[in-house]
Image (spheres, rainbow, N blue to C red):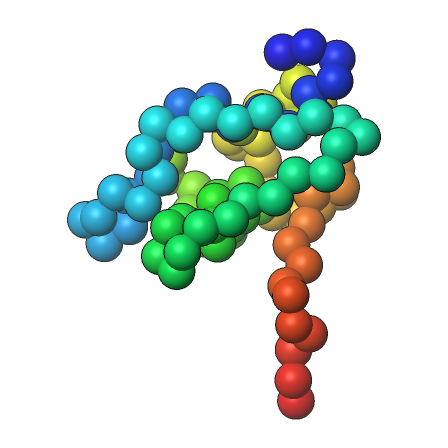
Length: 95
């Protein structure tokens, strides 16, 4: 991993309900750059975000995810949030 990489997803595979959603995904996110993950409904975008965040049901993946060169594999959601990792939805919650 080089110094410009802030988030590195390395060969991540995740199955949910017997269906493979993420398949051997590798991706580097560079510090100071804008990145977008796009695709049709069901492509795995939200699953990827939930996996990076470490939400319940999304922690049993193979491969690894690194944030600032530190593996996130054994970190809780709270520990990830304290390091600056969070989720923001495109629409705020409505009450």
